[in-house]
Length: 124
Length: 455
Image 1 (cartoon, each protein chain N blue to C red):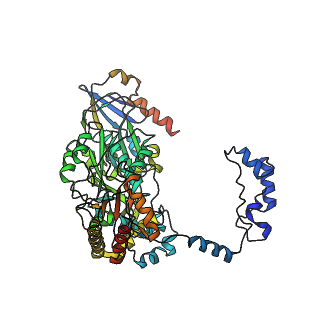
Image 2: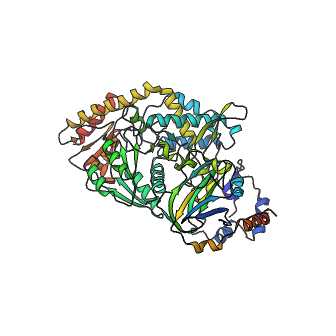
Image 3: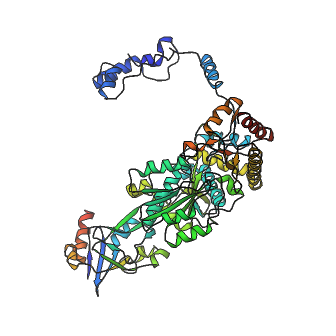
């Protein structure tokens, strides 16, 4: 099940791992992504910490840790081809995976439907 | 007192400030002040309005020029053997002629590439030259001076490693170390200085000073005392600890020495004054910074890149701007959003005029003349000189305070060197002597004779 934050990050929880990325909306707003500064494995993050930084031609945007946890995997393919975030932001463009997280932190997040409604309100 | 008193309007001379008395009255009325003095008080400035009694009421242009000429004539002309990071090298006359062209002299910020291709290309070529000189892969468009470049290197080290301890050798310029400490004072940056051993850097002590909180080690090459040291083994050891290494390098020396890139440093910074920039009593000078390619996105300052436009034609732009303040604000690599454009251009023109062989010649002659000077000086009774291993700078030890020697030699027309006691307690009898290709045999022999006379 995917959860979304108001900062346009998504979290997909399965088998004790939480995969994190940015939403299609965020990828669209950023424009062509030229570089992503990825976190290092085994590093601990608290919710709200800067997990990664995504650079496009016109801006640099921080990706905040939506939950607290320890990085157990990093999508190294993004170093080679950051554009994957633009072509497949919610699937192949995953940024990293966290383990040892607190599932109660997911309670504050939005379901995919709630996120879609949230986006609609933003556009108004 | 009105502003008119400053304008010399009484004497009917041409005013350089456009506000008339009537304009001023309106302005004062608007802000509710009776005049300049009340406005000054309202601004709560600590000191009173300067009386400016010694200012004349105004003079003609011709008279003013005469006045300045006689002031300038009071400057003493001495033959200088001064170094310590800033050197009196020969500058081809054509350098000034090229950089004085108004297209170069007055143009500035190249944020609109469509209107700045000339400037951008020049900076790109400057960056390329710095990379070649230092053996690094990426250079920025320049920084303010050598000292602030050292600080930026330290900041870069902390940023990349996410640690905050900087280890710096005392064989790095004392001026740069003082600047680093000034910058670090209000930041989470700890600066640890490691004493030198005589004229040599203390590699063992530098290794020992490094710990798990260290972000970077900074050394100078050639070091402040002029010694050329080999750093390969040192940088390899430090790299294994995932700590960065930075070398503060004398650019002209790099024409004949192994580059910091070859020796395994991550970052090369320093003062570019020796590349065709006049001494000018302290500036403007030129800071340079060049790094290995993996640090490309972490380097501060402007970077010019080469690209193609919509029609596929080659051109230049400011690039990797996502590092900078106007995009990242407080998360930017640094607060610098400028460069020493004219000085960087000067360095480029100098390098172009000198050419590869010319640069080597200047460096070789500087070294050869320094060796000659050292040998002549060491023949004087009571004078000990650095044995060898230096580029164009060495230390002599006198039987009395070096500062006194300087005072007594200035009237004879020589500035023989920098007394080390000003920066290194306990070394008051030592003098740092620098020689460049510009010094003649007569000048060197004259300086030696002048020293002999006061021994």
